Length: 262
Image (tube, rainbow, N blue to C red; front, side, top):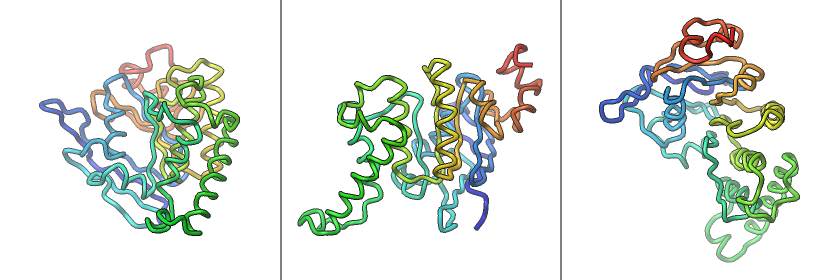
């Protein structure tokens, strides 16, 4: 099996006359934790939207290898199909089902992996009952791991902000991904919450053996946990490398980090 999980080649997208992303390249290997940074409007979330089927690229190619080492052209697939082959994401603006319980938010995600057929559900056959039991158990297990199981009957909208962030990650993990895309997971968090999030992301990576690509403005988080960092500015990659290299790169300092980062 190839260690390469995702290969992005010369990826671009145009909205009207605006080229939001231009000639983006990226190789992601299994088990990596990589950061994508840059100023607001640099094209970071647009890259995520192309990876998750929200946008169709204007040009370029995105190849993804699943658990059986089958390769897919991600740029032509719908979001549900992408999730099925192993790509999950969170959003900068939390998108939970706010009027549903914490438990039901996770169970909805687990439905993508249900094994039974329509007749099993209609007539409540044994396969359906066993699958229901599996889903209930898995939901409890996931919520317990993230220490929000005691709030499983609460509406998602009533959770504190940090726990809503946790729940969104739990929901993504419930789909059993190979690649997890985290879009500004520390947005709106205080320093203590950000520190806890750093530990949580490390735990997720070890526990699920995931590849993680994250967008983040909090440089303490990015520099503290990412092995590699790519930097976008005006839709183009201006630097890529290890955190210590990025911190010293003149183009990155000028466009994004500022002199204080040296």
